[in-house]
Image 1: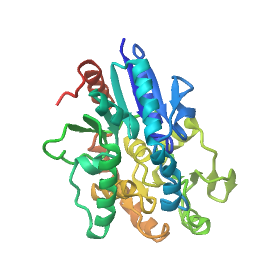
Image 2: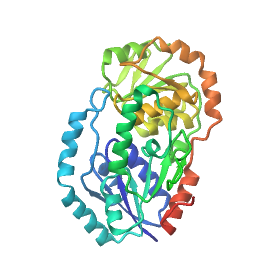
Image 3: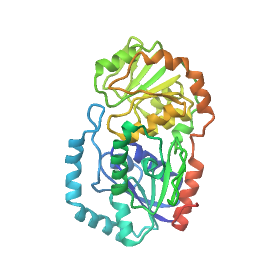
Length: 351
């Protein structure tokens, strides 16, 4: 049995769910998690969690709220020495055999200070580990985000990058890029096509414009992420539950969602084309939507809001999108677990 200390970025749920999927695969090992914000509530149901502040991001009206993000992170940076002291004490008390980080700020730095190997497992490092054909207008955002990832979240010794798109890793990096990591509940379902559209959008700039788009869909539409329940015309608003949501995702014709990597990966695994409407000023989400369109898996919805005019053209290409999705692999679980086991045993990935 190995003792594993696992740091998890706490903004939203995707990082914690990915960490749980990995920990559940290794029941023979002992895990303690370090997380913040939404992370502890998800993780502590099954594992011990130490709630330690870390850097996060605030979203408001479908865009990154820069000022609110600065206010959120200022106390963390101000108190970073004291917080680091807590992390170092935790490491001294627990004496981990392996350390893993999913986009967490302090744990990789503590490992550097102590000379301990640290494995990074996340999607964000696809921005810095690979080269991308970035449109000229997005280059300033790319440079700013890449700088942030490098300065704040790139202190691990090895990088396992999880991504539905897989550009070549830049030479000289101790990094591997693998297809998405999927929850067991996703793998347990077989895709069907019941004809409905699944819409998931948590950050809406203008509800009236959003409503104009979804009501223009000439299919039944199931909507998640909106604070409403019940049926209105062709729309069925539902409160999110894991089982119900995955049933509706596996059975839909296609998906309309933001630019979140986990949501897109699950849709593609089920063979569903995607209309991606990324959060403004969130370059990672832009990149996901950019590759959805570039690889022929769906449409990147640009602009301030979703345009009803894009629906007929998108639906006319559903067969084309589905064919391209079928040719790709969107489940990397087996190889990801093998690489994690390799790191736990030897302190490095199998390159």
